Length: 190
Length: 165
Image 1 (tube, each protein chain N blue to C red):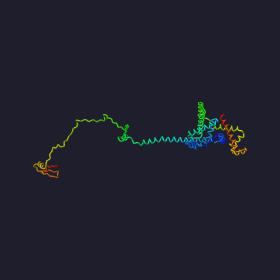
Image 2: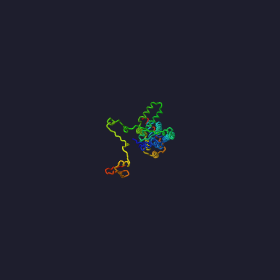
Image 3: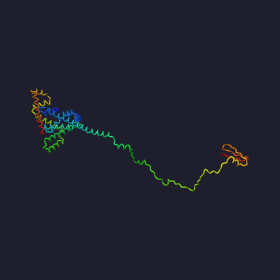
Image 4: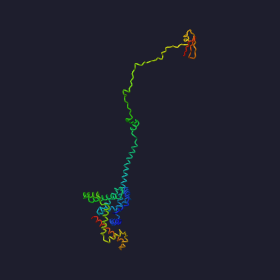
């Protein structure tokens, strides 16, 4: 199981400072939880990037409005996921107002129900990533592995491929875009 | 490995051209909300103080008002004394004597009453001449032994009378 990215964060202190309206505390919170929340919402939104982004913004707004002091990280994260699901549900209701009755039912299920657990959501995302990586052509997958797993500088990769740095960067951008599309399609079809 | 996958995932999900633009924009909006929220809380606190201030001024003013004349008069005219019944242990009760405890007295006919009268004098004093006259012809001599004592001695020598004043 994946360790939380913010295991070293002093959550009681952080949330106390956030409650006091300290901007530095919000910066720390943002850098610690942004990616985690966004990925969680991406899974909740079944790969709908736009809705995940909107829900993330609404979630952060609710964090500012309702922040309180939390004694432990796991309790804080659970609270964040409830806020995120609730924000996503409200966004969905706005998007599909004509199906209000059905939406209320969905919202009830989304907010009141357990929702995807954070490890489950992460696991789903990473397993989708593994599948999309595996589906890449050999040369593209190798490029990604050199860059992200072997930590080789772009300049060195370019030399190896006997091409320019810029061309290598452009190729990496195209591969990431391809991966993103495949990843989102995976989440949508899960 | 997890960190590598994290980094890859973050780069994949970021906007292609400007990877941090979306993050920065959202951070900017979040911090703006934080400032707005802080200002709102400060205003709320200030509002509470502004509401409390007139109430406190009113209380102080009320406390400094002179006391009502009626209240002063009351204090000067009397002192309130509160009474309460004594406890049973502090009470003393009396009851009438029985027939055996009463002694009655009545005038009795068996008792003689003796009365004295201080001025009842049955004798009278005589002077020396009267005394000598009483001796008659027997011849007597009055021998004075003190200012208030004298002895009458008869010449025959058989009778002597002694007298004291």
